[in-house]
Amino acid sequence: MLSDAQWLIRPGLTLCYVPAWLNASVASDTLQTILQRHRFTQGQIQLFGRWVDEPRTMDWCGHLPYTYARKCLPPKPWTPVASDLRQQLVMLLADLQITLPRDPLNHLLMNHYRDGQDSMGYHQDNERELGFNPLIVSLSLGATRRFVVRPHPASGVDSAPLRFDLAAGDVLLMAGRTQVDWQHQIAKTRKQSGSRLNLTFRTICEATLG
Image 1 (cartoon, rainbow, N blue to C red):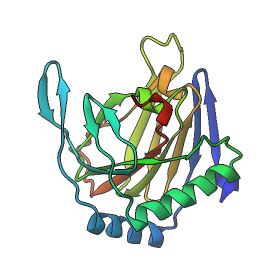
Image 2 (spheres, helix red, strand yellow):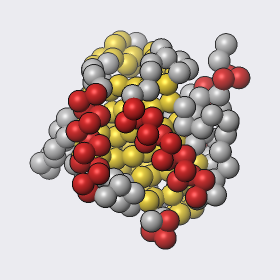
Image 3 (cartoon, rainbow, N blue to C red):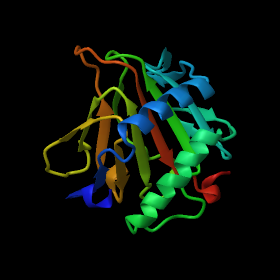
């Protein structure tokens, strides 16, 4: 498994791609369990002074609040399946010899892309609660979708975008200055695309909560 891990280092970018971290059968069962145990709803975000529906549905887990796009997600209990995945991913990080923060991966944001028209525009996971140089661990389940990272226009980084076709069971880890100097997205696609679930684990630092 770890022999398949691929590190990609660019100016301001640290990524680790682990293909098929979950095998196809386990990934399929995990997808169905999460969709059954969690209640996904369509939220809203504020853009250019008005509230609009997010082009996907979502749910979350975590014992600390998390604020993004000017909305606060209150604490919400972990389900057994989400908690088990968290423990397994913490062990993966340890195997990759990544220095773990206190109470690692203590928040999970789950985005459900119902079809190819559900999407996530270019953004950074750089909220204050995530601390300095946040570690983001993303697990893909369901249909394969194109994930793109590019330098932030204000970063001064001169590097070509990187593209990944993330399939069921794949893990993508983003570390270092990635959330400072780069952006990432899941764009809309006209290709036939089934349901995809993206689980993004992150660590909220209690010291930043006030």
